Image (tube, rainbow, N blue to C red; front, top):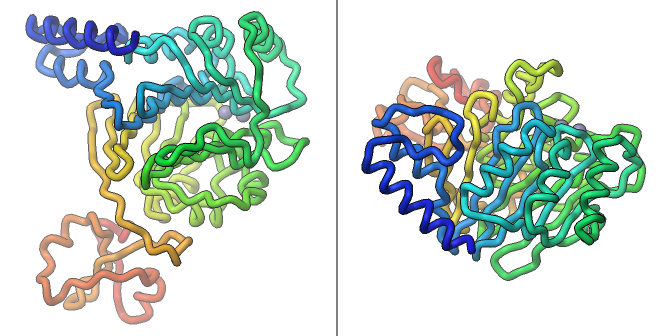
Length: 370
Ligand SMILES: [Zn+2]
Ligand SMILES: [Zn+2]
């Protein structure tokens, strides 16, 4: 079914691109014809059976993450407020899917499950995972009704519950770790998804209390930052434990909660992550073949990340700096000035800037060693 739709979409795209008219199955934006082919590549799935792609769909202030799993399987983690239901449904449909094999409802706040009733009604659904909570809102109850109307059952999401257990592909919940919480966000079902060597961590709205309760290994290459980048989440120690290369904040432009927090953005950056945010980058898609990561944003930015093998002994994330031993400057590895350093003066280090400053080094004025 999916292949059929994908081939049709691709043919349609090629034809339309040939005619120099933007192929935009999402139908939301008009794009100059010179950019048409780039946009069509982004909106029609380029997924091969060996790839995994997590799409952090821009649903304003909320979360909706669609994961294309290997072998044409799918997972949806949250779906945003009710007004984003058709956007999420169209996004998934345009990629050529009509079935959600795994549906994760992280907690009962409407910015995560407001459109879940529409999603459940629209798609063929495999398994549903949701934490047990004390929620009772009208939106929540009508979602439960839609689930039972389709004869579907809910598997309780909690720490240790496994979603996928295959040789190359695993997914399990890291939280919640108890039955009751005062703050509803802490019921959030956080999920770790591993494909080959690449690890994704989806934190939903889990706050620092929940982060501290997780005893499982939280280290990850890609993290969906907890609670829209609020300072209620992303505790200093937790951020260090995760040690992500890519941190995605799902957040609405000009939201009334003033998310994300500048302090939290700086914290993830300082831990070595490149931060993406859906209010500025639009939908962010992070793909992997199990070894190499590639990332695309809706605004056309794309990059590749080679993940260095970490030594098994180091569970803590270590930031590497590049030193110019001649003029005693500390640079971030991606600072453009690094390429100018003569080989004999170039040295890599994992010492902290503070320790280096005591040895007479100063931070580069351009990259600020960040
Ligand atoms: Zn939320
Ligand atoms: Zn919430």
